[in-house]
Image (cartoon, rainbow, N blue to C red; front, side, top):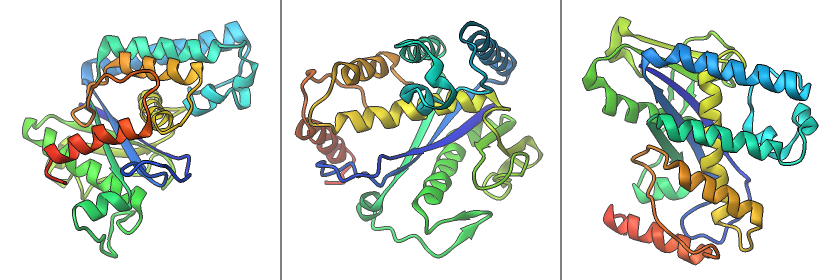
Length: 264
């Protein structure tokens, strides 16, 4: 089993939601079968070669925030070609349905569970920082779900805290023993992280758009795209809303979910 983890957050602005804050920190894990890893890596590399040849864009990775906003080298894309890339990756995901695990932390999450992060560091993760606490809790959830299977686990975390090649999670995943290998990696070198980047961006962008008071046609297109993917994740709830749904409608869904979890 291979798992790729990427983080996502922002925009850090005030929201009118009672439940979703602008300072949330989210980590997303995508789970791949060992047998499919070589194929996925090859397909992502082939897609990049297509972009280089057909659009004369010199890139070594798909970075979906830049693609969506047509920034950096992606500004050379023809109009709407960036959206075509999103549609293509959404179709790829819809076909494979890789399992996804999500963990979000903000001050409301901590208050819900009466938690006060201790001034503690596990390996390089500072639990007083929401982004590090989010990653730690995500790793604990991965252990809960997959340790019983006793499959060998290779885990990649997008670089940022340490340089590519540095080890990650040897204490957190110590129960795996020699069957565990965890590394920080560059997404340009590890295509699995580019898939995680795509899923993380879709989840974060969809949340942001759900909080907008007035959505554009492009906003609605993106929400419909993400909904059609039907992301394979126990942490996400599928529902139907009218196109002109409001933050109050969005909060009502959160309230129902929270009541089901006995948080309210």
